[in-house]
Length: 212
Ligand SMILES: Cc1ncc(COP(=O)(O)OP(=O)(O)O)c(N)n1
Ligand SMILES: Cc1nc(C(=O)O)sc1CCOP(=O)(O)O
Ligand SMILES: [Mg+2]
Image (cartoon, rainbow, N blue to C red; front, side, top):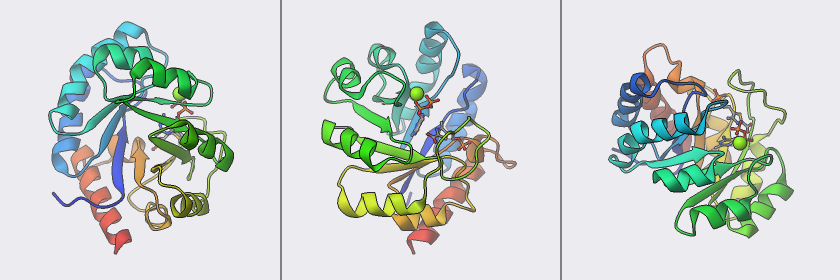
């Protein structure tokens, strides 16, 4: 499997039934190169998050793909996830780091803000996430980021950057060229008309083409 410099970071749909979603995740991960899967369940109980982690985490980890939990550092540690993603309204970075430990991945949402990203990077975040780059129907995204932010960050900083928000196989090229280390995607993978495997293959090809 060819590994590009910029890699795919899959984020799950916000509502899912683990047994039904497991084969879709398997199809996506077996189709091509994926660096990371984020379990992002909104508005559900801790037990539902635990059940989804137990069903989906092994599918990723058995394939060498990092499994990251959104929003819940305690549950991430308890369920054996590789890390946690926290936003500006979530558990603060330093607290999340204390909970999951130094060996785990902690990523931080930084919207369109150089300041937030520098703070997170200096504090020790493993990656900073910028977005939304394009209109998205997956969530109400209050911030709009431009590819220039990725260029600025990647030229100055070592900490990897993730681009998120409305990213598709067709529009991702400028984000890759601007220096995104990861493309985080929901809809363009799970809602792809030919299935998640075809979606991953198309992303891998689009990224490779943009890297030239
Ligand atoms: C990779 C990545 N980037 C950004 C987000 C958004 O996090 P947040 O702002 O906390 O919003 P929610 O996802 O929790 O609704 C993310 N989850 N992943
Ligand atoms: C979870 C999330 N966070 C965003 C941000 O801008 O921080 S945009 C977003 C949704 C991404 O889904 P899709 O790939 O379907 O647009
Ligand atoms: Mg959050």
